Length: 534
Ligand code: GLN
Image (cartoon, rainbow, N blue to C red; front, top):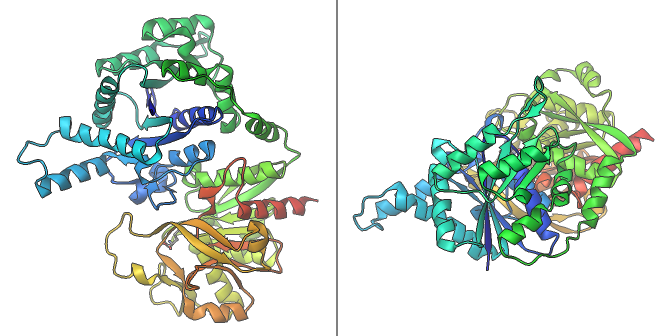
């Protein structure tokens, strides 16, 4: 029987509930339990696909093509399980379903209300995920901070669900912050107490408190929190700031976090096998050297906008025993070759990630020309691949004025064009080529060497593609099309054999990299970058 773990947050937002939930998932998996997760986001957008990465960070794409919250990326990386559309639930999607049902007459004339109709729909999503994954444990994280008006239907649904399923089958972990006051030299517990009061006023009593803190929590303060928040003393868990997020599961394991959870959920205690993870953390903490990788993009002010790319670079670094430092380069500043040479002089590799819209494009093209000509290891992702093709067309295939119709509909050579099936789509949201598709890789290419396979599957999120009308010209000019869709119609990977690592892909490899299993294309990039140092 599935046991349910609800995670709420109090005091402030951005507490890292996702990392705490993912870490718990890891600890349960390390005990041989199966784990599924769900992220409930109280905003009205149907999914984050239409939200600006500046506001909401990266849009994480699942195998089945859902555009989801970036926390799902943490969950997949920590728990090493692929999640799905039902793993991300927003108020928008819940209301959409209820309103559609109402229009169809499914409610038989009833007045449709938050309770019970919205809360029933939320509870049915929990059950839907349970039926799909049939996990031993289902972790459900509620986005936002307790006290937010918009999360109330979710909190009420948990209250009902917990009551219905009975003691020992569901718990609530409440994450809070203990602010440190330097003037008195104290960690303060009052905001946490208050947020638990608010939670209780909604009828929810947390069983476990996880407290984010910059300093160790003295026993006296832990006891105080236990007393005032009515949790047992061993259920006050400290979550200190760590150098790497991958250390969090181990820090929580030391405090027997998972054991407390198992006891509360009346589940069998089992020994945890965390050897591989401990090795990973050891590698993270003892790199042989540091290398610098540039990310040349548009959303460089918010690293969350490219979080999976950053994590994938780190994973590949761990495999090569190097620490990877990211140099953020705003592509708008890459105005000419001199500027590129100045900005890229101290980096050993460059990633041009995905993106939308014309801003910063010419700068990306300048960066790609520079790395191609100077043999700087390069990985282009989605828009990054489209830019690599445009750059090659303009400067190597004699197609001056080549562009994507996304940026210039009337360009001389539309080497990147809207996909046929995209041409009649009007609305936004869930309308791109999304999710996992197969790709065939040509033998004898760098991509084939990296994957060690001829058939792969990768996740996509795009509307445009390489225009097949220009493939022959580009091939003649030396661009190698090393990966194609099984029907040979869509270009998936391009590369240059003469460069150490100049590989670009239409899909998003960053969504499939795992800390213990870095993605082959990132591994290839980092290997070439490391070789630059010797
Ligand atoms: N804007 C491009 C397209 O829609 C690239 C998308 C991306 O990089 N995710 O095809």
